[in-house]
Image 1 (cartoon, helix red, strand yellow):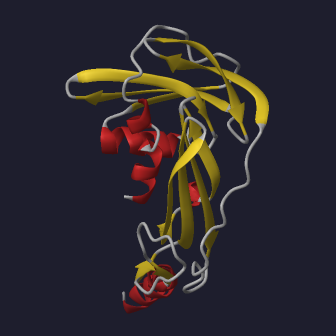
Image 2: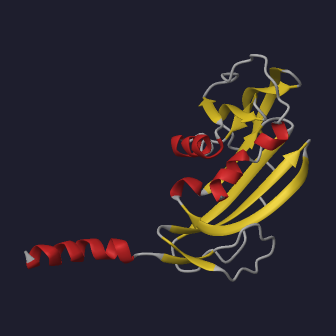
Image 3: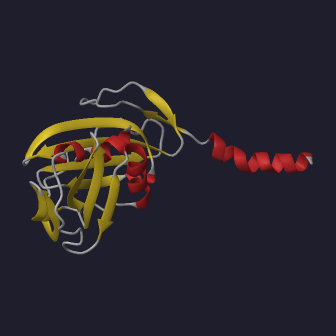
Length: 205
């Protein structure tokens, strides 16, 4: 019995004891970050940029624990509003000291999806960078259901992240492959600028 306990201890101890110390700062624009926390898997430095009408309206840097599905560059594009999230992940103590550089400007990639313009969602949106999927998402705000459509990266459309968005903010997320696969049905796009940073709020909350 004692031998069995010892074996379990040897097997489980390295997994339980393996944690990293990571810098942990929210919404810091400079590289100065002194707060730290224990993380079970990876440290990460992240940068989220929001654009409206082609102009940058927000630029936020963060450092914290991350999971594998948060590593890399991702974006969601609803036409008028686009959010780009870049993150660098690492696996040694306090390795997320340096801020993430601003992602380079992306170009159209040939993929086309529907997006909403006013009350209808029949306008063509040229996807950019690694936006390989078409996306539709709906949120309830003030008792009104609002749907927006556009382009998204594979990371945004991962099952884990889509489920996290649904569970956290009550949004329904649907992604598909193929040009114009996100339907052209009429809908309202009044909350477009609110929905654009949706993914970043879930990732870094």
